[in-house]
Length: 253
Image 1 (spheres, rainbow, N blue to C red):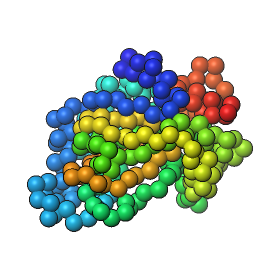
Image 2: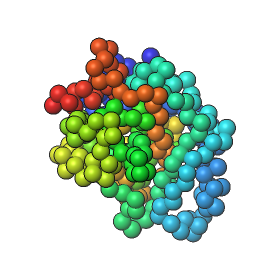
Image 3: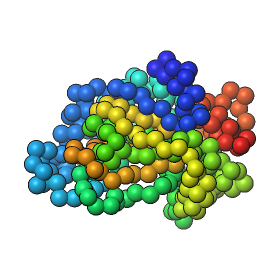
Image 4: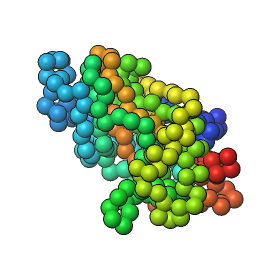
């Protein structure tokens, strides 16, 4: 198994696990070259880095498909979500690219991710995490503590189920849920999602997280795609997956 038993338990209790070297460095280098081409900046000329934050959408070139579908990632998906219960990625996105800046970070703020659209197009979340099996962070550059690492609240995914328990299949609007879970998880320890090119953080869909400012010297390139689910969580299963066990533990608290 690509994830050890201890790593699986870390995912259940803390809400995330880092899979190191999840995709090859050569594949990551090609992906990064395509990102530089897409934004029209020169990686060797800082004068072209005129914006602190650039968001790119999905890329489905062969390099990105290869990065998203390595055997180790697929095995980890099976371990955490369950074999046959997730949809293989056809590419990667979105890309919140951050550049060195003294400005306050844009597009930041503690939140959970939405997972499906409601009847009127509004984004929502329900207890079964309809539509989203995992939140993932694919690192396409070295990310140190000063390089705008994503901050995560350790164990905050356990604070979320109480706000979804009585909401039924329709769940709760994304904004309402964030307004509830952000203060509820405020006392949780914070960890930085640092790492190297090729590392991938596999996060529980309910994990509370935020972007940060870039105080380093090297642009931070990362993809933040969802792993889509085929079905909702089975929260009465006698053999729950790690994602389901975490929700069940959160309900119990």
